[in-house]
Length: 354
Image (cartoon, rainbow, N blue to C red; front, side, top):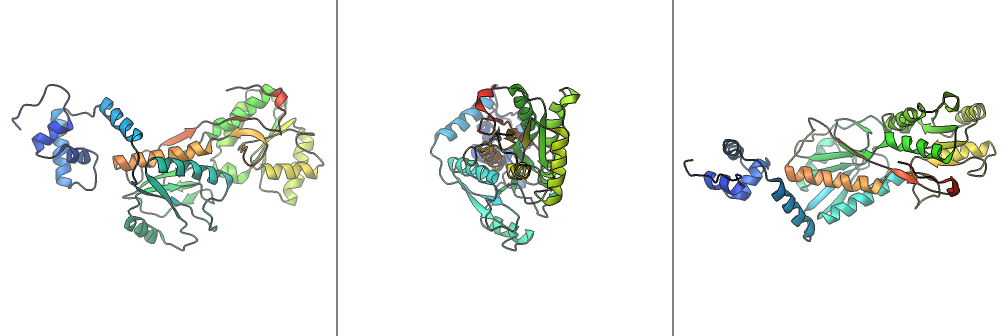
């Protein structure tokens, strides 16, 4: 401990020289890597603290740049875990786009995605954990689950995990999702820019629960800025059933919206057809999840592929830093959406806003 250390920034090699360890071992110890003995970690941390060691942000940036430029070799697998009755873990259009983005980013980083459906495979949480550990899989991706308020009875120690959206209520994991509050806010703002005054929102109760009220909250926050005479109550729908059709008919005839924003456009189109109305000839319709590859509706592109990419980036970063278990402070990564033009809103009225 009497050897002099350079007055410049303390490096990993300086710590390694004094601790009689390689600089790579020092790096792993400071990142709490499981391959390093606990006593060694404590010794290295104490020595680093006594020397005033702090990571060099420029060197870290250079290392990350070199890793990004290098051809990625296979690093391992990440688990894509979906609880549900379907054998297809990519159910739902947003699942497909999430998955495409995640697979693309995983491949770029040298990983592949492996599907797990514990419901279909009748796998207990303990059995799933054993399979993951035995397969060397430590990174977990949870796409939106079938039910809101899903509770996962799973031991997350030794795993780095992230969830898509808010369908998992317990435990509180890191989350990446579209910025749902701003999505409905921007949709309403855009339609106001088109010149529409009376704008209605048709929202399913299920999505409202799964989004923790974010779509509803954004709409109401923006609606609160407009003249009270132009505000229309939100129609919360339980699905395309007879009683709901009657409620929709009453809502539509009472409030006479000039244009509608909807989540499940199939439901809303069905409601309108029962009234003898067509989109967009009789009434324009915008959707909260516009997908040009699937339909021609105008609305909000939620950037689902980008959500999938960020989910993988986050999990791989956690693995690199050895951040495992249930986070003490869950982080929410929100991806901005943007307006997508389509035939259900006349393009001649288009005016872009932000």
